[in-house]
Image (cartoon, rainbow over all chains, first blue to last red; front, side, top):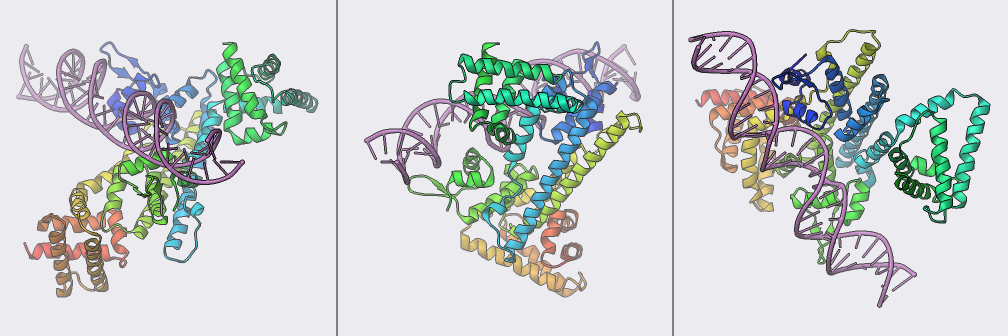
Length: 247
Length: 247
DNA sequence: TTAGACGGTAACGTAACGTAAGAGTCAATA
DNA sequence: TATTGACTCTTACGTTACGTTACCGTCTAA
């Protein structure tokens, strides 16, 4: 049971920050009768998690979302964080290389294109990719892939067929309106399919987010558009409408 | 000669950011008759520098201060930035270790103290480094940079030449004794130069402190040793002797 | 000549705290 | 017992580095 100051000096963050985290409900310790905050071991653990995420430049809101989820798993998170930090380290390495290259270039020893001059400095790329994934259900995706891996070959085949069937149906109608009855029926099927087969229930908001990811994450876009160009966009719109209507 | 959008896509930063950097005077390109910003190769180079500093989480004001200095040297900066990025990488490494340790601990395989739980997460480290610098000489530097900014390009050039001349002279004799007549004469020139050109009078004690900073602050060390390895150390000793003798 | 891509400024919004200000609490000490 | 100093609280305004929106001018290709 530690008071704010103690926690602050232990962790190197400010008292104000602890207050703030309490205020936004990110880390709300119990209080004693006199109103003083007291942090348990568990709170410290949670704070550690928060700081790991913050080291990855996650916005606090997202941290809160992640940690508020009922299926949040401490150990999983640690592994995930470690991997992300490795990636961040790699990015720094890239920047360092760019600097070295620039030094050579400045000394006149090496040519350098404009593009090369900004290698690794692009924040948006890496950021969005990770954010989109985490925000919109990476955990669900991970979980689902685990589940899928435990199936037999036959069962996998059946699942794949269902996937294809739904995608193909959507592809055939993708030039129409995403709000049409036809489209909404197909999307409903999609929603049911996801909820029934991967041990995870998508809320309508998560479903909407998933659709957004199809457009945001180029990997998903590419994947989906194999069934028909523009399908990812169409699905996002249709899923959006679906989420609105059934709300 | 590139327009904003082109620069934005090239570097991965937003148009708004470029506007903002112009607004605060951090990166102000020329404009055409219709008011459009056009970025030269030189501007791109400067932007690259800015992004390197930003990768180190330097606040923009400080970046501006650094780059506005009359003795700002592109190459020196690159070396410095590289070193800092290495340090940042090391800090990430420390955090990764902490996570690994925590994983062991969570699995019950290892004990872990509270302090260990927050290893590497302390931001203040980086802070101190920068703060120290402010304490020593940034004030004087600020004052000087204001003065310097009011000079013409030619005058700035002359100033830079003087800088280089003195440094080079000291570099040639840096293997001798810092108390030699030759060394003391050069240091005297240095002392006069500083006092005459930056609207700020160094007391002998401040001058001695300045010398110490050359050794204490890796930034200055790096900067100075560019003219010859060990020059910073030599200058500190010589400045120390100078302060003692003229006291 | 008109649409669409791109340019500009102005102005308000946001995130994550920093920084007082004013007041209560607690433990040690005079 | 009174005081002091370190600590606590809440409230509230300030700051940085942009994002976002609105509204308008410019340029180029069809």
